[in-house]
Structures are given as structure tokens and as C-alpha cells.
Length: 235
Image 1 (cartoon, rainbow, N blue to C red):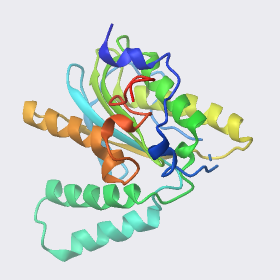
Image 2 (cartoon, rainbow, N blue to C red; image 1 turned 135 degrees about the vertical axis):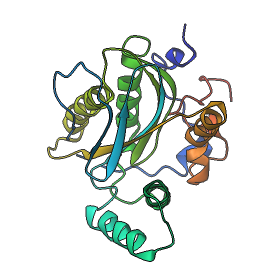
Image 3 (cartoon, rainbow, N blue to C red; image 1 turned 120 degrees about the vertical axis):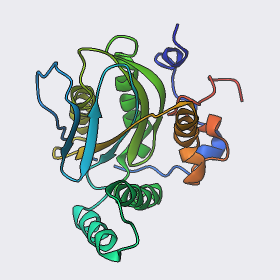
């Protein structure tokens, strides 16, 4: 059995020290992508993000709740970065933009609907549903207002369609649980191809330690909605 699949059937175990940092909250549904597409698009761009879509590569993916990051703020950052003159390449400007976004989202802005255990569990189960069939799930972490996934693509399953299926399914049922309607996820997502083993190790460490960095828990294994989580009863 794949290492991550073992999490699919178990009930989230929430250590007391995590519960103290995890206030309850309430959310919202949308997805993007090209319905029915089965051909990979290699490298393409939409909105302010470039995307890579190629089977056999590992990708780090982040998608966010609709209210977690205002578009006006992103536009302002883009203008500041572009006009500063300090960063000379598109790649450097994208890295700076992502650094600002990561810092902002870890501060927990928006309603943070994924704080609700039943919603976080819904997202977790959606990620695990087609692991080993449509993709290989390497690492994952559900944060209060965003989700990190490290995945290996498989032929015949374009990345945009994979992300679309996660978002469409979870948005529908999250809104059912919360008795509301409206956009749940931000339209876009961010992906980054893994270059080499060193980059892979850095990506794994980032995903696993994001709850610690955000001050939500003291150890990565304490976070119940993560591939780093300890099985129930192992405290």
C-alpha cells in the first residue's frame, strides 16, 4: 500500500495542543480548467501564473480559498515588484510574488473555512481518492485557507483537470455542509515543477512544516490534515 493511502480511512486525530490553536469558523465554490481535456499542455500560462503540464514529473501545487487573497492586493504587489527595478527577470519577479503570497496566506486571512475539521477531512479524502490511479500523491497538507500538494503526474490526466476535480467536488460538499452557496476556491492555482532531488527534499520539508511555520502546531506530525500526521493513538 502506498504510504499516503493509509490516511484515507482514519478519523483525524487532533492533539489537544493543536485544538487550542485551531478556532472554529464557517465557507464558499469554484474551479477552473478545461472540462474533458485529456491531452497534456506542457507549458502554458493563464492569469498571472505560468503552468507546467507534463506526465512523469513531480509538481508542487497550491490552491486557495476564494477569500484568502484579494486580487487587488496581488495586483498591487505585481506593480510594486515590476516598478522596483530590483528584480531583473520574470522568474525572480514570480519568486518574489510567491514569497509575499505565502507569507500572507500563512497569516490566516479570510474566513479560513478549512479550519473546520469536517471540511479539512473532505479535502483530505478528495486528494486521496485517486492516488495511484490518476496521479501519485507524494505529500499534502490542508491549511486553514489553502492546500499544498506534491504530486507526480500520470499520462492521460492533465494537471488542470486533476485540480479542477479536487476543487469542484470539495466546493460542492463544503457548501452543503455549511448551508451556503458561492465561490469556495480561488479560480487559479499555483504549480511548480520539481527540478531535482534537492528541490524535491525542499518541497517535502515546506509542505510538512507549513503548519509549524504558521504557528498552528509545534511539530509537523501533530497536524492531523497532513501526510506527516501520526496515526491515531500514537501520541
